[in-house]
Structure formats: structure tokens, C-alpha cells
Image (tube, rainbow, N blue to C red):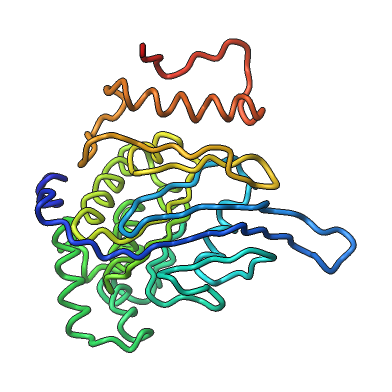
Length: 284
């Protein structure tokens, strides 16, 4: 099954996402102590319903901190965060969260790990099981449903984690370096699977990554962050057709977006070197 077949074409898009507004948000750790650390400074990001937005930046710039605050798992120091029009003051429930570590329970098989959502959220188990089977089939993982995490490859474990993230059809998906532990080929496959599944229902996605290529390959918009204290230095709209091609590097437009982001990192001193060549310059 191809990515295009998974996506079912634009005519099948079902918008299920809600807006996210991050308004003048700051975060300082240890504010009441002698050595406060300012992690984030005046972050302003508006995400439209059903939009796929990535945040890229160097290690320690506060990307993960920002995601945890959107989820309501970490308090902000100032500013406001609204999800679906509601101010986030506690952990939000209509959300799917994926981390770099798959966090699967070793004593439960793949299906049981996914349907744990039904137990935790007190959802109809039969409905969750039916949705899980649908997602396992779409990701070509039907053969893995009864296997335990130790019996699955790293890529398969991460795809099971993706099923768990999506099984309750959340309006918001928050992802923190979900492909970070995967090899290059597996990352490519999981990226294609994620885009295809997102296209089917269009939840709102906030995707945290170090990978510039990954961000361009998946996103509608990309927010580039500075080193600590993290602040937004650019917002880049990605005008590439969907579903995105397997080999993104063949498209000159893709290279232009990558170059623009790398230029920011070079100017900020995040990457440096004498006359470092970019991916490819595109004539205007």
C-alpha cells in the first residue's frame, strides 16, 4: 500500500483538528531561587485547525519544554496557551503524545499496549479495538498485534507507538523527536506513514525535531528557534504538494527551504565552518 493510497486523496480529508495559540509565553526554571534559568522568551505561535507545524532549533533551546506546556504537563511562567479556545491550566485530554522513546510496556503485547488507552480514558473498548485494528492494517502491522515489544524491531515499536497515539482520534497530536532513535531508512518509512495517517483526519500537529529535512518533509509551517533562551526567529511556510515524495532531496524547492533554515543556524552560530556548502541553491 502506497502513501497516496493510505491518504485516500484530498477528497477524503476530514478536518478534526483544533487551533492552538501560544501567546507571549515564557518559561523560567528556578524563578524563586538564586540561579534562575530562562528557557523560553516571548513565544508567539498560532496554529490553525488541522495544520502540521514543526519547531526546529538547537539542543537546549526549549522545544520540548514548549511542547510539555502545550500539553499542560508543565506550567508556564507568563503568557497564555489556548487549545481549542480553552486556556491550558492542567493536562489536556483530547491529545495524542509521542516521544523519542516508544514507552511500550514490555509485559503487554502490541494490541494491549494500544488498547490501554481505552482503560485509562474509560473509552468503549470494542470501538478502540476496531480502530486499532484499522491502524495496524494501514501501517502493515497486522502480524505484530500479538507480539511483545521485545519481539519487534525499533521501527515496528515506534509504529505501534504511533497507533497508540492516534487510536482515540485526538484533535491534537504532540510529537517530541519521535523518529530520533530510528535508522535512516526506518525514519523515512515512519515519516511517510505519519503523513499518510495525518492526511486522513487532519488533527492539529505540533512536531518537535532537530532534523531540518524532517521538518520540511512533513510541515505546513516551520518555526525556527534560537539558542537558549529560546525565541522564534523565523516562520517558514512550506509550499510543497502532498503527499510529499519519498526522495525529497530531488526537489529544488525542498533544498531551498532547507538552505533557508540552515542559514539561520549558521548566522546564530549553531553550525559553523569555512564556506560550508548548502544543499543546493535555487535561482529565483
